[in-house]
Image (tube, rainbow, N blue to C red; front, side, top):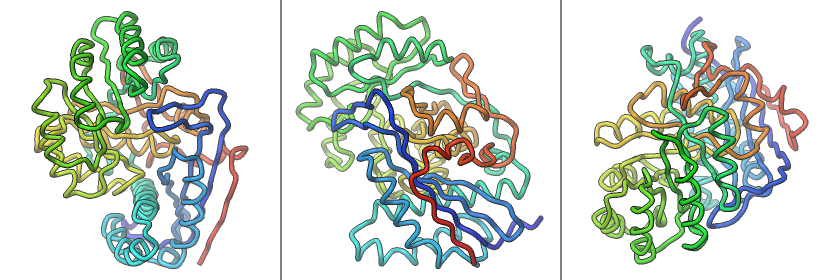
Length: 380
């Protein structure tokens, strides 16, 4: 089968799953789990899946699914694709004026990222290869993982369940007040086993001065990285000042939007965390990851939504290699677990992927039909 293909069909889905316990961050809570999926099919009947980023606020995914229905059918249907990357560069050029005119660079970038994912999944399936080996023929079958999203109210209990599920590293959300943060970190430290790792994520909570005031506590807790202590767009001098004031490794990248921003941030980030659904898709994240490794940074893909984006992130990390860990949300989310569990398993801190074409998921919507709130299909 030729590597080049022609697009014959596009399907767009919005999904929502109610949960009992909201996911809590320093900027707000997530009361339901949401997702927006793209399915792209070629004229040979092969298909691929991508996920548009969105978790907060909950309306994000439904809106971006509707946006995809508006902007993608015309440039996609009937189009010839030689490689996903070159095609998505042309697609981004076509949509640039809309992103500027509508003041919507973020939503347009997320739609483009999911398109790139779906085209890569499709291309790998056409080659009968797992995505990781379509990107790097020497990619392994496992990647290190950590349990993410530990809430401020039940972090120890969640970490115990995550440990039982195979995790050996954990990330606590902070920024809820020093007393709450200290209590949670002390509880986790007391419960952790030898060799386990503890990360923290402030979700852009503080100014430079406020962040400097938290250094002593976090150094005492011996955290392995400090994620997004300040706004991602805080001045570079602020980030450098924070870097120079602590031995704690800084992590971030999910809210950076282009390669220039990442290249600048390489000077203060020890752990680089692009999001495959927010900007760049597979091609963009692959380029960032490889550049990060050249700058002696560690690539750790960010992801906190459904299973399709998580599988793309896992295959990317396997293809890139290095010492990075895959973020796996520890909170209940059937939009993740129903998709991922048949294709993976976590054992002693590593995610094991099955040897199947593409991202290893034939049709995720089959297991998620009860959560579909919108579905639009477009053909030539």
